[in-house]
Amino acid sequence: MRATRFGRMQAFKFPFGLTGGCEVMQFDAQGKAHTHNLDEVAICCWGSGRVIVEGPDGAIHDVAFGDEVIIPAGAPHYMVPTEGETMAMFIGYKRER
Image 1 (cartoon, one colour):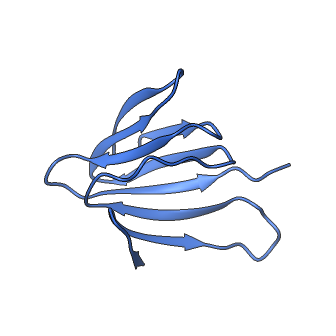
Image 2 (image 1 turned 120 degrees about the vertical axis):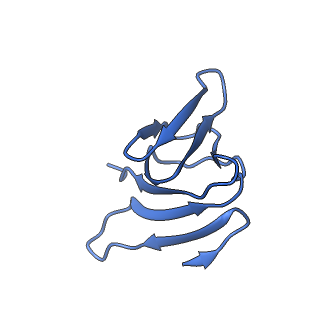
């Protein structure tokens, strides 16, 4: 896993032509708001925290182990672990059609 500003991450590349992908992200601190050009599904696989989706259709999603959040393409969003905890998220990106 490589170090990031908010914790650590590991991206996975698929050799069979998918344009989407997946990664595991460990959050020890608040992530930075960002967007993607693909729909994203975020599944909490350790700890707890929030997934914050900004914009007119935005929402704050409290998450714990097993919870999922679907983030539409283009929606600014970021993750925040519960204070004093580490949160890990499995992130998948929908492939383009």
